[in-house]
Amino acid sequence: MFKFINFMKVVKKYASILVLLAVFPTVWIVGRSFITEPDTGIYDYIPQESDIVIEVNNVNFISEIIYQRIFHEEYVLDKIELEEVETKTGIDYLSRIVLFREQWANEHVWMAVIKYTDKDDFTAYVNSNLNKSNIAFGDEYAIIQLSSSDNQENLNDRLNKIANKDIKPFTARVDLRKYFKPENEINCYFIPPGSENENSIIDGHISFDFHQNHIDISGEFTPISEFENAPFIANQLDENVAFSLRSSLNILSSIYWFSNEKIEGVPSYNQMSLDYDGVNLYMVDFSEGLDIPFKSHPEMQLQFEFQDQNEWQAFLDTMVTNGQITLDTANNLFTTSQGTHFKYSLDKSHFNLYEHDINFKENKNSEAYFDLQIKVKPFIDNTTFEADSTNPPPDLIMFAGLSVVEGLKEDMQVLTNVDEVRFQLLKEEGNMIKADGLVQMTNRDGQSMIECLIFAKEGLMFITDAIEIMSDMTSSE
Image 1 (cartoon, rainbow, N blue to C red):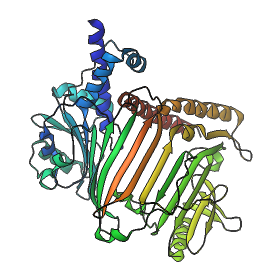
Image 2: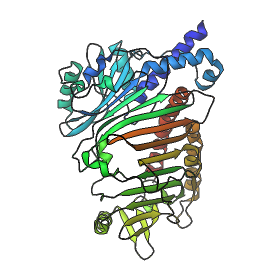
Image 3: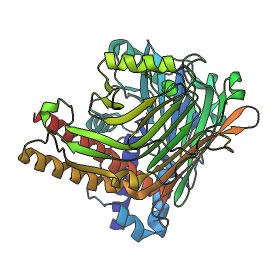
Image 4: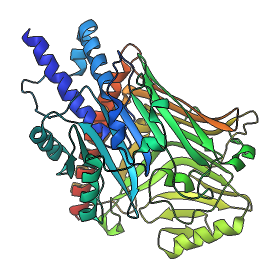
């Protein structure tokens, strides 16, 4: 009996971790499970002006973890560490969690909506993990501010209005019940801001569904009317490298879908092809003036195909003037201000960055506008560290620095329980764009929900540790 009660504490612990993971807009953790029907009243707290909405069906995760504990006890106990003390969180775990981004007062602000059971416990738990976030409480739900604001006093008033439902809800704009299916562990809806000249998408939705050893990604986007004649990707993916991407969408400009900070001045292009297979990092003396004391030489080839060479030349000239890059035109060398080195070429229709050469293979039969493949283990294994041969740091700093980064690389192996990620945007009837993808777990006999939850938990811990270590290395100058 004690063992089961102890396990239920663990379920709450991991559900709490799930909540924290869910309050970051980059979370892609999902599951398939024994499904109940939580109340959709949480949708009433999403403001009409939101342009991204993410729903996490928390109950699906809890149901699957309990199921796995009962029928696959050895596997679960090997993955989840039991603890003696239960953490009071004040969270109602049998409810959805919703994240949304609202354009408000010339800002984009991320917020989360979470059902609570106890205000004091909830406030203490959130503040201990999210560094004293601003919280407004409604009758059943709490609104948490996740991103900073230059208009905090006015935003506090906005939080209270959302908590009291003194807003026009998002459902007056889009019926989320039509797209957010309870059998999916994560559902997302996007309405990209900006004009049609800044992106090709009007709106769309993506869902994530866990199976035993993989996650299915599916969805649909509505493009602008002019998109009907858009080209497909021109080059094949390279399935032998750690990261391979092909796109006929101007995604660098359309990064505005997800952030108010877009890459200004990036010229238009027809095709982008990128292959990455690791990076060689060379530790240098702090006299190099780099924020992080490593020169980097990525094993990469990147190509943009375009129609206006003058526009791209002007873009490069601007980056040189602003000190973002230096160009050695005699030797075709491209170096960023942070010490990343490439070879480069620019002609009337292509801009290339590469380490060795450009060797993309043509794809004549594609019906995809976007194609992506990520292999996690090669991504980590193909990262190397050594001392720079021309300007190394002092021996003691070099030994300590290389020891630390090799330790980080070893710690990154916890992320390899995800084997591969594939994602495509494909042509669909009616001038629609179909989203289709897969996250494949390395352990084919495991359970993808537990594997991915641990992946995200360990990943966030690794990123936090890495930032602290790199910060310490920089401050040691």
